[in-house]
View 1 (spheres, rainbow, N blue to C red):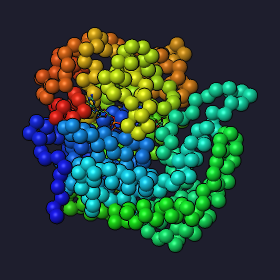
View 2: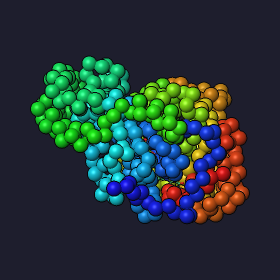
View 3: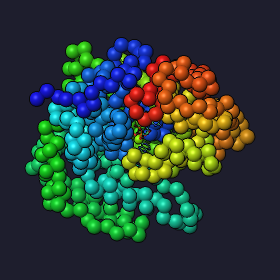
View 4: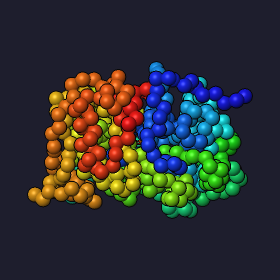
Length: 459
Ligand code: GDP
Ligand code: IMO
Ligand code: MG
């Protein structure tokens, strides 16, 4: 049976790709996540042959809205709505087998085709239930009061086992890779070594945190894993080799980032980050495709700032404007349902992340959410210890002290959700976008004025 696309072409959708160089492209978040990467990947996919996720795991939540249908993707790439395209989870992804199977089942129920159009790297790492337990216990243990600190803030992870799985990847002896799911005899031996170590570690953490802990049993883990591995086996492949074959054959690859550049383990707001290179720098280790192949990096940016979890956020608003943005922008996490912290657009942070990720174009999302605000503010510098700086600080201490210098721009009263062309945007909306590109030094190539595919303006 030929693959079917769940969504027939819609004449109202602007299917043009923003101007970019020939060749491959990456879609990367430039803030603290949830910028709308899923929507952009879905829109771009028709121009590419392969969509490849390079980092993260089920901590990500990418929503794609088509008509009245909403698809929530955590691990499956956002190109999956186009059944004829290949969707790949690269080696840099941490794969929760239960979540992938759940997602495949749910998406099939929503009418999508998932078969040999979805592949998982045999080199990717597997998130197991003890990783999730460790994630939660580690957070609980970290915030236990002591003689010096009665209260501290945890990382505020999604609890999806991401950090512990990447930590095991780095430790090696306690890691399980996707390829290991193909040899259950060897896996059984491996788990008999790993699980006692995990139980010892987790029991100590639980004891310290004052939490309950039931040790994991190898037989139960294997019984749980067997049907999942059976379902995933047809999707497991050497995706690095396949990507290169496709590239050599002249096909075009779209790399999908999860999480975002301010959450990058090396360049983000450490330690309040995730455990992978979510900037575009992660494309290469996370898929095995070298840097010179990817001349286009589209940086995805909300028209304002949001953050979920702990860590400093200089432009956070604790007033009715922040509440309004949260309400109008439906700023509640796709993965955990947590309310997102909201604030004015932080251009100091954006200029920094655009540089780290090498953005060649910006897509400004959720512009519609700002409609009706009398004035708009953007942060163009920080004041730290009485000194003004445009440099993004490296430590949470410095960023926590940063007072935003806000520039006020005129707002736009009119709704913009029906605009489909640049010149249909109100003058002050265009002025706002122009200010962003002028400050950051990267062109705005796209504006999004609503969650649906058709609510998109390609410049
Ligand atoms: P991602 O993690 O970067 O893929 O972003 P999420 O899907 O977690 O969060 C973005 C949310 O904003 C989703 O609910 C999208 O459907 C929605 N969205 C995307 N673009 C727009 C837009 O231009 N306007 C509005 N109002 N919502 C949008
Ligand atoms: P998408 O792809 C928003 C945040 C968590 C937490 C920190 C560490 O949907 O944009 P982790 O579970 O990764 O150890 O959590 O990172 N975080 C995200 N915030 N969007 C995401 O992904 C995120 N992925 C991780 O809230 O603060
Ligand atoms: Mg998200």
